[in-house]
Image (tube, rainbow, N blue to C red; front, side, top):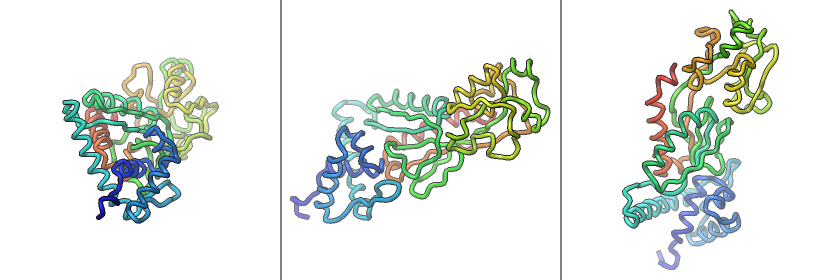
Length: 302
């Protein structure tokens, strides 16, 4: 190849970031530039390579065959620069740069946060952004490298990695149990106040009380979009709640309701595009998460 037509390493690295994040706006934000600049650099790269590297899909930008080959070259450049950076800084850490993780509220606080903090302590040049929201998995979550989701993970353009199962169970506070009593059957739950997610805003159906016909319509309800608000509402005596076992199962101020008669098992998944999974940073995050859930398997199963 004529040296004058060699692709720019900077443009290759921009393409790699587009492949991982899927959208120009997310790439521009990550790299501290503009959508127009990203578009211009990709067009320049296409001209240098003699073909299109990206094609638009309903879920964002996808690599063409030429683009996939270019990304392999970009990944080699990224590895080389990472090694050089380590030599310059005299730091043995192989991880540097930014990794963005989207996660559900409760799992994010109890499992994702401690694993990411520990990973960053081991790799001081690693920067982390964690976005917390309870929503269904996306084919291409713009602006993130990795998603941690619960429930069904039906995706075709991303890869799913199973982390663990946990349980949703019924709980009440000791004060509520003393004042209102506890149901003796599932039908009796309908005579009580109930704490749950806001149904109209809930994207993960399995987290809501009406996902199965086992739970009757409650007398009254207290609904919140945050699982932490739900836990506090139950603790304050607002009613019976369908809560993650790993958040309240070992707390003395919460009483199990109908233990053994009702529970809902949900999986926890790590989800990422194939291009993101080739990143050493993303692989390190997944390994840290697996280690965290393994160490706390008793809590998850309790």
